[in-house]
Image (cartoon, rainbow over all chains, first blue to last red; front, top):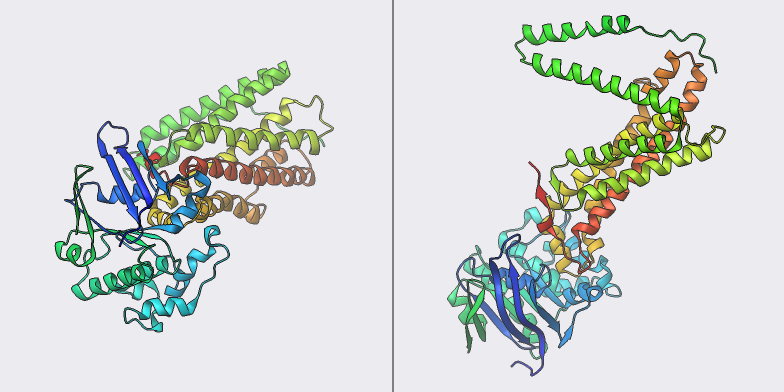
Length: 229
Length: 268
């Protein structure tokens, strides 16, 4: 169940194509509250990825504003904000090394100073979807598509973020791998269901049916429908 | 120092050497390389450019006014700053300004250090005979470092765009996300200079030293000058490369910790 005051608010978000007047995203108003499981659907090119990137402040926004807990986000606070609101790209990216090296990576960043990699926590996360500790010593080249996505999500979840922005996390994965991803994400969200929210882009109506309690439809850079289930 | 052994060349003697271009032309014709035209243009350009610079230097040396010397130095610096960018594949708005600032600051600082610190006996402080060749050598190498560094930064950041954004998404600051690319770029700019220092005197005699030997300077005196110039070049290249890569980093990663990939464009 969603809490009353929003975690994340987007007001009148708009983004133009570079060196052009065409709008890629326009007039997007959105509030994400603790407990939300929000699916964003729409045809290719509707602006779903751009919306997630705009929410994580990765792209230049031409108009509108994103607020965190109803306050504007100062430039210096953006890394700390992104650690709370983690955007995960459709194609997971890793640095050279083992899975454990990659899980350790975020703790080398200033925004996570004071926190330390917890092997036990990482193993518990991976174990929750039936993966053993042997995964930690493998390199990313040895991982299947589903495992890559699981590791990327585990790398984010171990930081205990508040909002997870997932861009088609199960695209091109088989049913079983997709189920593991959904279990991992929903398991994390249910651990603190009133505080945590997940937003994911999906092309699969079945997946949306399984996972979401709110659905946002997009077309041509605009929100064209909202549905609460 | 003595210049007793110096043998001046007449234009006729220069012309004898110029005949060697026929050899290149013959090779091109025999192997159907179709390089005759380029060879001809390059030879004429080389001769014309050198003669032109010779006359300009004659004038500036003879006139010996600080504003004439610095004016010539400024022209050389601007040409070097623009040339550094011309060899770069990925560019952004402001790249010429960053290149000019880096070339200017690093090479002028090194030249000032040389004229004011190492060669402090030289009077006046702007004596063209020293200032112009020193600056020229520093500029030539700094230009290379800047060009290599700029090119590598663009390539590195473009190739690792997804990794950079992954880091930013996990809470990396702009520096934390960019540092690998920045380090690679600075390293790329500096390595040729380090390699040159490794082999200098063994594989080849540097141009300036060769010139001094030809003009009759004692070898050990020429070597001392060469050592000074190598250090000036190495530091100038390092400063110029760090400068241009640092300025580019600030252009490509804004204060909102965003990677402004949209600012990078391919030049060819």
